[in-house]
Image 1 (cartoon, rainbow, N blue to C red):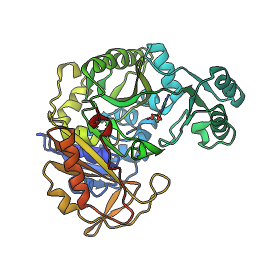
Image 2 (image 1 turned 180 degrees about the horizontal axis):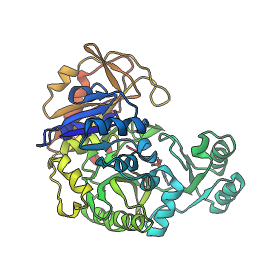
Image 3 (image 1 turned 135 degrees about the vertical axis):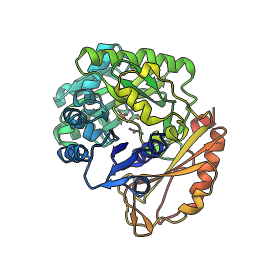
Length: 423
Ligand code: AMP
Ligand code: GLY
């Protein structure tokens, strides 16, 4: 069996690592593999957006299953194109990927489906948007409608901040076409959780709960990043809340997408704010989270290849997932300057020592093999992950592994898991 991973970050390394352990013993391929993927997958020298070339390559190689990691190729329609060529591919169609590709579309679907979310308006006219903010009279969040690499969300505590955000997106074109339309919504207060499920168009098969750490600084301060660390399970999602998210978010979205002629197949990620008045959806992603995938794959015991095939066959209602009961925690190590910039080309030392820490695994995000060395090549460099009897044990081991790894300017948060640990 041959499996192609589209994408080359930490999420894809973790997915590939789990897929490699399938009893199907697949031969793995990955697009422009990072240093971690390169050890377990053969390289395909194509970018994730080169869809014509990827379809042709996968057809010629007779790839049995393609798993798409990042949102960009999904919103560009990679799944539709593979399907038209008769190739099995896991991920949503272009029409279904609009749940992430357009925040206004996602809000519209949530409204139709009756899914709890922040009050909002969608605007392309700057004066209309400012009028909504004035009449709303409370703090708001201004969001670029389209994909903006996680940067198109501005929290505005005062009307002046909101006006400045609206001017930058709608008048000055700060995010180009992605910000030519904006969603303005109520700023919600609460604790965030990531809720990710496999969907086959009709059925929802939830993954274990997890929590990300989006801010660069300790105690959740400073600018947003792609994610500085994650852990699973997340105690903020108790059994009652999970039931509520499945029944009041996941299934209504699936039913509404099907009614709209865009059934959702793939990983559906709901970013949830647990507020005093219950869970509310902040956003949808149409893919796994990064770095949430890393602790989740560390804990997943089921054969992921078989599960994805069941998903493509529409029988996720017959599947139950097996999880390691232990906790897993990932610490993301970043290059100097991240998230504003990212210094590249530094040699990473200490990976062999880190590998001796029991129950740990280093997932690579932005690092490349250069002869015998592993060299930084991006902002988020490594996802140092460990299992432990409880979250404290997992954190202890992950940080022990981190302590062995160095390169000039490396930084990471030393408080990953703090919300759960302080409960
Ligand atoms: P998004 O890309 O929509 O997930 O937004 C990125 C981050 O901005 C989220 O993870 C939240 O931390 C924050 N955020 C987004 N929407 C809201 C909201 N309505 N209220 C408070 N924080 C938000
Ligand atoms: N960890 C957040 C995301 O993948 O969008």
